[in-house]
Image (cartoon, rainbow, N blue to C red; front, side, top):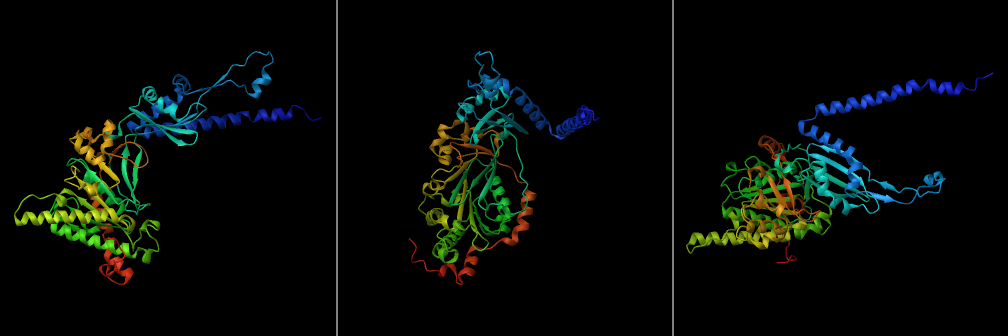
Length: 468
């Protein structure tokens, strides 16, 4: 006769094996975490310990900060188990929290509860910073019903960073990766349909390095062509763009007459593109199809822009000539900024103090993207970022004059209200030179490309249908 206890004995016979497998998994998990901890740098180790403390203390901390909800409705199981008729004790619900770490601090995702949502978490932000040992905490909406809590133990703005360009074409042609914000999150700006960008700041605080990052990232794309007017030098070899000049279809120094020729050349391109965009691309705006090798995005960099626009005072013949050239340069660049967006022209103007005498207001005020590194005066900060910067004292660039903040800029970001401070990275000169050399063969004059498309010179295109 079969023993009725045999199946039970068979199950229990496997218990040691199951226990051994569970222990092996636990040991493997522990070893993996120990190895990960040992291999991490000192900053990341601190963040790992911080993340553990955040997880372990969450269930106690959340009710203290009123980040919990009370459910007075008993569950079905509790109702069935309640045989004595006494009131069932309400349940305290704690939002679930998933925490990960990086070198600067922790990133947590919390599930919202009825009555405990984005507003409640944002209100508790300063208290979370104190409890978690963070310099600052930001709370944003992650997905519906979930918030993202970013806590930084160290201020990312105080740590210089480097960018090492890959030499590969960017995934998105017109996306400018700027660096890390004050919560160590990557910041980028979409320059699609953007006609102009202004960059201001004291000498040596990062303007040229910022442009260097853009050149390093965009140069590998044949769908982008560059021209530059550098007001700091007379010849390319003297300045910051000595390596990049081989990747530019045009370069001029501080000579106003030569700059005038370049700006006029680009205005002719703008007019020819405007007249032929429907014929060539079949659309009203180049951005409907995007930049291409044959119709590239043309980026004009005007470094130290005040050189080309400054009002020259004097009655002698040479001064009058310079004043006329400066006025004409301003008019030509205004044309590019106000009318070049839809045909793929982008103007980036840099200067130390973007007041109206450095960049005329009729140019500056139509550039939707503006950044400013350190400034000495409130007037300069307002000129660079607009009057609204007065309402955001923490982000005001007059607070960035300490050498610690070389490479840190303030900007009004497209995707969020107010102003954001950004740590822009340094691109090593040798790596920038390598990218410039490797991509030099991609350089082409957009006028020549358009001529190949149309079978005639851009200056011969019928412009009678264009607005004056």
